[in-house]
Length: 494
Image 1 (cartoon, rainbow, N blue to C red):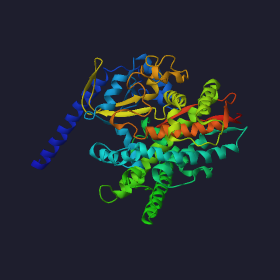
Image 2 (image 1 turned 180 degrees about the vertical axis):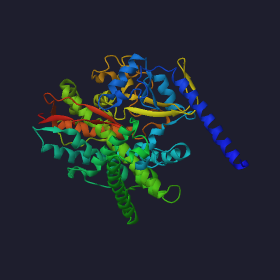
Image 3 (image 1 turned 90 degrees about the vertical axis):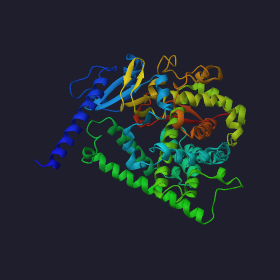
Image 4 (image 1 turned 180 degrees about the horizontal axis):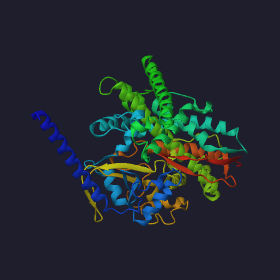
């Protein structure tokens, strides 16, 4: 046997031995973590056959195992689900030992590996530093005009649906898309007048496919996924979404080249939309691919999450008439009896009770129900050692509904967020916008948007529930309604 062959065989054997002991150590440490009984080989696969009811299933295990439980959706798939505020604090604030989960790689064909949503380390910091000025409070104040204009069109469309049972989510989804396009991207797409938005459908399809792959022991592998019908559906959705993104970028670049700018005074950087900031750095510190990926990630994060939050808030108001009436009376005190009066930035700050309502809706139905992380070194917590490389699911939906943190957790009670009660909420037990260094940079933007859209609806219509209808959400990365969000609109009488 030649020396080269001996060296090759020795290297392969050494690698296999190293991998065996590495995996053995990891698996031995997993066996010590709290976990429900599992079937041989297939483990807990029976619990993950469908997305509907998954949050409730995991929440039950978390209650049983005191906020931490190891789950195996399939062979060699390990997720450590947590709903403990101290462990969530560690996951959200540790910048050395915690990174995004490898499962985020499922987003990379869509959002790229170097976008704001998927990037890590210095590259992520670069993107974050570019986007932060777009959410300066002076920028937020000028966005109010756009919020109001898009909301006015939203109300005009809803006027045609008075005294009908409607899926309010369909309409508010298109409204949110118009808002994010005009404010953050600086272009108008008139989504609300396009009653069948291919963009919205394709976003929902992408989220469904990614969610299914996350918990599938087969589709999680690229080579198997490529043999499925979902791969073809993803290809079609990607074609539509990337075409849309590129058209937005091209339209904005052409406008800038023609001297059409959103700059209205000398404070140049403070007056630019997010896409302006990216294009300003085009070819200097950011590539065309970076711009495309960032726009796609921003459109997704700023549109879909806000849409479901507004839809759930309107549903809860419809099913809780006493809360709806109090919220309306607050708006009447602030804005008077003229339902067409435009809310100002100052008016938004006075909508205290409506903000409590929205925060409680976000507690019950957080748009992003899971934060997915991976640890780079062993970490000891509550007598357990979490092994290096473990994927951890921060169960936002579940911690929001634990009795330990929120008494009567399934009850809709905006008073939880009154000034005196909100101060009692434990840090990292309420995470609708994430927390730590990777928290949602647009949370104030989203709150102002939601206040204007929801307040516009309340000032024009009374929301009524539909007999026999119950909203059911499915966790597709972002929560999605299984059968829409159905309410009835009645003309508001002053």
